[in-house]
Image (cartoon, rainbow, N blue to C red; front, side):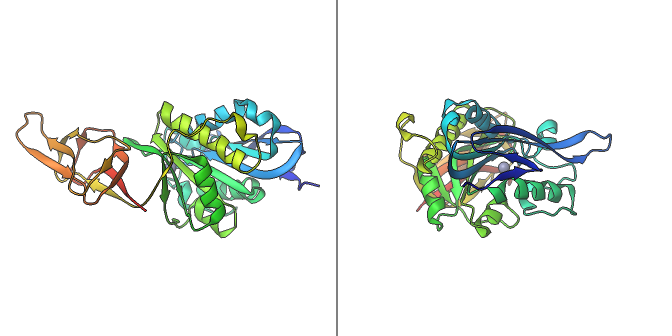
Length: 317
Ligand SMILES: [Zn+2]
């Protein structure tokens, strides 16, 4: 007999699909801050996979990826359960902000506490009602405002189940990245819930390639876990590149960036990535790669101050 899934006294039985609305807090004017969850349980027992997006409220490509998964035929006949949370930080989503009302970053507040700050309370509900009932997870992110990311999985690859999920997802890049204190990935790692983090595109935008990569990858992970039939799934266009040691190349001078390299391009040490000039072309300063690697992220703004992050590069494993 499969274990019950219970969220806020609501029992979701095998073969059921339920929408659950949880009130987290009230804002100054009594506006409700809520967490909405949709649980889909197949008739047969299997893994419990959570899908979460917009923990950083302005990172909305993942919200669209989960919306498409929820609308997909694939969900009609699954083994196991999908717990979908397309908007974890509803406050940030509504205000187009990465943060919570107390200006905290939710992804540094896990596991949270029922008596802590607003961010800690939201983290606590998310952990108890979603993560602690799951066997696996995928968390969706994008670059920050004015930064875009090549579709990539970030994961701690020393865990074999995590490593398998990353490989099955088959995004163009798999970045072996250590855990940050207070992050959802750290909590999951310490509590044996294999999790991968998807990064793709830019905050406050829908980017077709990132959304497609996230959607296809999620279905491939579900197939890898035995939750859906793999035969109808699209084959990945390329094998993922395994990367590590990511670093940002910063603008050596303020000015206007004329970019020479695109996301996903391979670069050699000392390659010119872009040139900083001014509106009259009175100077020209090269931005160069300090190591060989692949461009996994970049600024989308041509206006840079000295020290602003311009290109995010990771080295091959
Ligand atoms: Zn994020």
